[in-house]
Amino acid sequence: MRRVGAVIAVLVGVCALAGAALAASIVYDTRLPAAPVSIDVPQGYGIGQIAQQLQEAGVVRSALLLKYYATARGIARSVDAAEYDFPAHVAMSRVVDILASGGKPPVSWVTIPEGFTAHQIAHRLDAMQIVSASAFDDVAAHTSLLLGGTLTAGLEGYLYPDTYQVRRGASAQDIAALMTDQFKRKLPANYERKARHLGYDVPQVITIASLIEREAKVDSERRLMAGVYYNRLKRGMPLEVDATIEYALPEHKTVLHQGDLEIDSPYNTYTHTGLPPTPIANPGARSIAAAFDPQKTDYLYYVYAGHGHHHFSKTLEEQNAAVRRYLH
Image (cartoon, rainbow, N blue to C red; front, side, top):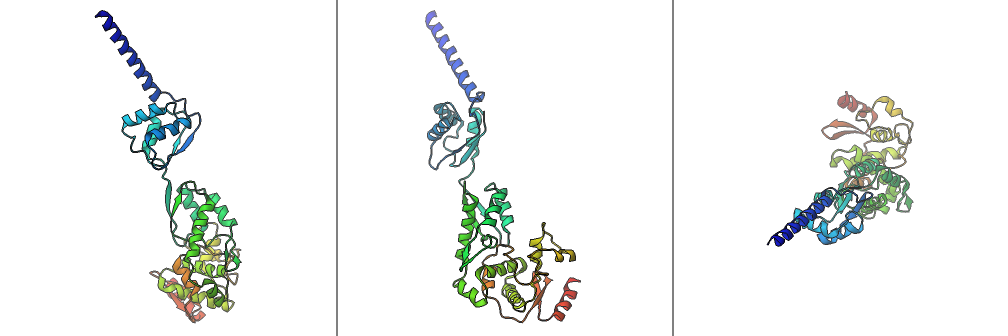
């Protein structure tokens, strides 16, 4: 009996030592991974497959031990399909913590408001850690579209404002293509013919749409505002649109001063006649529709009258009176 008891005591001791060694390897062994590793867990993978992925990537030494430890922790059935980032030299217990955190989802939803500039879009994508602002700015500045036989000067104006599902790992080029494809789908029927009828090419009409987007506050004034712009262009009058000055300034201002109106820029529609070189924002469907279908009017001027509405005038005398009434 003494011999049996001694054997049992040895076995218990061995088991205790083995358990301690396993516990130590789970909690204290930080030799792996040797460098930061990102793992993409596909949809439908179970904990065994995930553990094998991690072993093959050098994140853990034993897939089997990870599988049993994750099961004991109660997360084996709740690891999402996602991208997981593992820093260098973390214990298996931390690896399981990272798996339990959920990781980066396979897609991101991003909403681009109407009137955003390409640079604003770039910063929103950067803030959401989708692509860097500099990468998107570069694509927007150096990519052209062929619209109605005319090449655009960059993508400003053609990045359609909408809500997009962006897959993980998408490049700046991928996202720009997603938005410009949507822009093309949102152009009105017979848009090339309509542009020719107005006497402009398609990018020029979109430039007018961008002015409408930045200036109009209510839908009922969009077509009327378009009519004002076409009237002024026809007469060779400078457009004198404040939003073009805001676009030209290095920093956005909510209130413009007299000195701002003298900025040396081709976007200064107070000192340059005709349209600015490119759109100044990315217009939505309502502003695009208004630019292709302006309201026939004799108005040549407008001034903001408050509560989202503008006062429209036919003569400079009427405009000056409206300015004194609403702005002083």
